Length: 96
Image 1 (cartoon, rainbow, N blue to C red):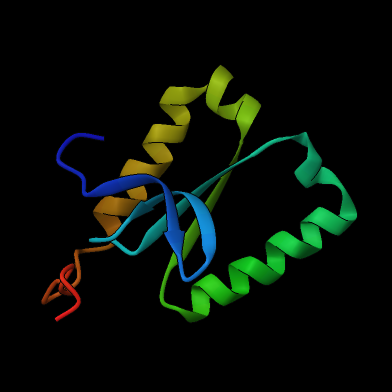
Image 2: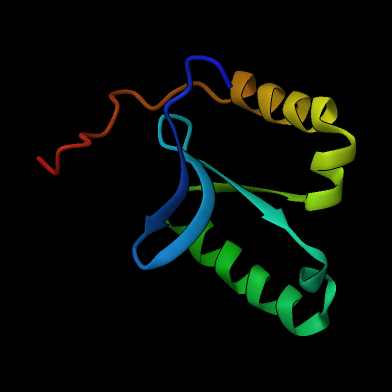
């Protein structure tokens, strides 16, 4: 996304996330078919609860959805970002 502060494959407190937009506190996860299994769904839900408790919103998309409908996926992300203004003030990225 243009003009976005995003990091791919970021590590957040020992949790690897696919993409994180720090300014908007959004995490984007791209799920493969293994995430359809009941045990994986439960792990994902527990992880989402933890991330949300840390102040993040988690948006999940299936891999095939990204491959087959990238415009639709980007529109969901864009709409979400527009509806949620940036943090004010932005948190320090230097640990200060």
